[in-house]
Length: 114
Image 1 (cartoon, rainbow, N blue to C red):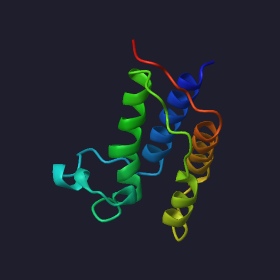
Image 2: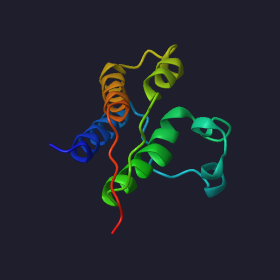
Image 3: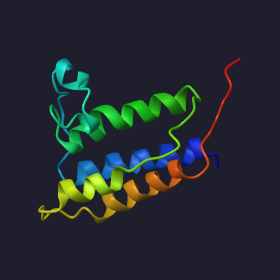
């Protein structure tokens, strides 16, 4: 299985886990919230919204276009901090985020454009 397929599968897991814990929004945030220049759009979105409306779509775009994927990722620690005080069952989500961190942290994919 290619790294693209592996990452795509984990993105589906992340979406499923966010839905399961009730952190998948039916409506997108206003466009200006998506234009944040802060890490994780912390000034305009909560972490789950950032995953749903920024991270997942961006990663899917990179996969679909066969563009180079990030060579490092540190999303799981941010999720741990965000969900620390939560009583939600986030074990599956944390596993998926740790997996994507590991996949992106291993050798990156470099695709030259024709």
